[in-house]
Amino acid sequence: AQKTETRLDDVVIGAADFPLTLLIFASGAAMTERLMSVVVHAELTNYFPSIFKAVTIAAVVLFIDRFLNALIRVYADKVEILKSSGGIARGFVRIAVMGMGALVLLDSFGVSITPIIASLGIGSLAVALALQPTLENLFSGIQIVADKPIQLGHFIKLESGEEGYVHKIGWRSTWIRMLPNNIVVIPNKMLVNSRVTNYYYPQKELAVLVEAGVHYASDLERVERVTIKVAREALKEVAGGVESFEPFIRYHTFGDFSIHFTVILRAREFVDQYLIKHEFIKRLHKRYAQEGIVIPYPIQAVNYKQEAEGSAKQEASERRD
Image (cartoon, rainbow, N blue to C red; front, side):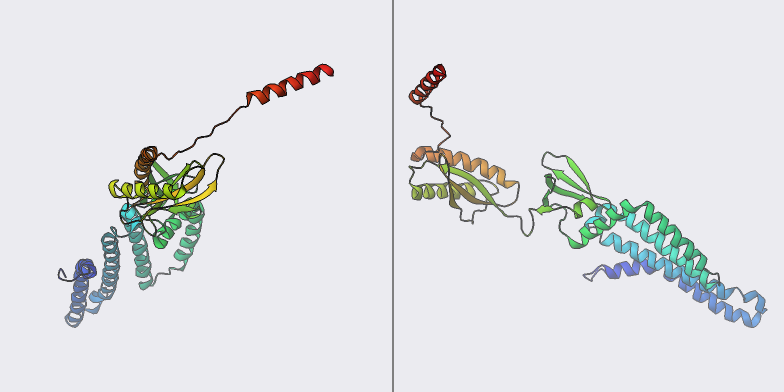
């Protein structure tokens, strides 16, 4: 089993160890019953078929229980929701398997299980109504794991504005580790029903947009050349920049004081954009100063002569009135 690529055969062999021993014991008991029926009074061997049946059912139930629990352990590292809740899953599986085994055992001995099933149905309905919010979060968690809109380690932004790394996906809630290193716990139901932006899907790389503006008297072709050169240097020298990406700019607005444009760079992942913006703005400001490119700022001019003439006319009008 150790020479195979899959671990499924190891799981089957490990799960069948003890149940197989029980089946061997049951087979031995059956053979003993046949031998003893020849030399011993028949009344002494009446219990052997029942014992054989009970041991066989117990062996099958134990095999299913051990197999499913071992399967959960094997895939706990591959399925996000099992990484933190594998123990709960194994407990649920054990209760379900043992319960079904008990019903089969009772039915095999002629005990009517219909009233038991009816009672379990009513009880399950009452429990489901009482645990409705918990069950909603449980099935929402299963939906998250199955659909995989987010995974552990992904950087996401919630509809409410919080953003951070997916720290844990549990049965009831999902934990988001924000950049200040605090945790936001979100019920799975709310997460499934809200809009979520995943910055790691379909890939981690993302565009970094930097808004800027230059004076109306600027040579826009020269501004574009200088800006792209600075952007290339920033992507090559700043950690987190995508060196192979060719940055570019797009002019888009005639503003009140400047011509506005957007510089498009590229970062390896979401948090890298902050350092890239920081270094790019510093370098661009320095290069513009060296090249004589003016970044205008809002100026409000006041015409004192016009204001004085207007005030005098208003005072004269008030005196006439």
